[in-house]
Length: 464
Image (cartoon, rainbow, N blue to C red; front, side):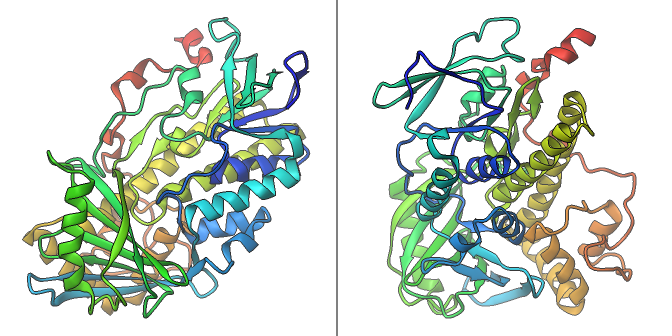
């Protein structure tokens, strides 16, 4: 790294070199921008996160030149989702198979392996403009013009430093985002809830050794009283297990291991597992919360830095990659002179919020259909899945929404059709089943922190 006596003026300072951060940095560099990408960690951590990539994410990463990283020896293509609901004796009482469109597939890549591959590619493209083990200290945080003309001192683990005055700053640095704190945004709460009307939960991950009989399938199994298990192949000889559990007093790694140990033997034959032995148990909050606004003057937020979404099948990564794609498009328009920065911010704010609400609606349906416990939910699931099995066009639409290949948010009428209450109208692929209605579900109530009410851009404050 260069010494602090030097000063650089990149177009973009991107904080966080995860999936979204590296993809955005490489995309902007390929468009001719001067990009500086920094990452606090000197090496990727091995954790259960960002492993299941929906078809939308696969297509975006492939378009940016990362497609080969999704097809390696330790990766797995997923072509279908299967859900099964069980009674107390582990007999199937309802089930459905939802295939992706023929040309689409999801990809599973172990988190550490994917991040290593992305960061290696970023280093090749960005050169010394990609800095690992580096933190940023704002030098003019309390200045009136900080939001428009920020100045930072970058410091590496070796002690080398560099002064940077970027035109734009983009936070891709996760739930505990420092960029969001520079913008005056809220802190992330310790716990939340996975969707509207639910209590706090954890999503617990574990690793199972052995191959699946159908490695191309993402499998979801709701037990009678022990929660919902999701299973998918992560490499040639390992599988990932995810399990939703209530965040009750005493919820910890020891209790999770005991519970999973009681659940797996009863599912071994049904799920066609080679082994019910597992290891590397870890958990995190299964919540969703909006931290926005998405932009303030020269600052922008992407992915978990902007909004956390319940981890129900790779939806968080889907929304992050949509934000990446939108920013790449909008900043190109800005350079071309077809959009000014104020319009860019407003449009990004609008589409980021609508994307979040879209995922909230999707997760709301997924949760109460596949994850919520109780006899009533099982009866409702049995009716709805019966309708889906009779009407393949409904499964096709659900597959489009789940895969991220359709961002056309369902209206109330379409929801009633997806639930089997109204007859399904003919439609073209990618179109909603029915036209949008003016009715909107109260998803704006989903985990918007109270402190956000005072978190406005300088331009908004001046006109208030």
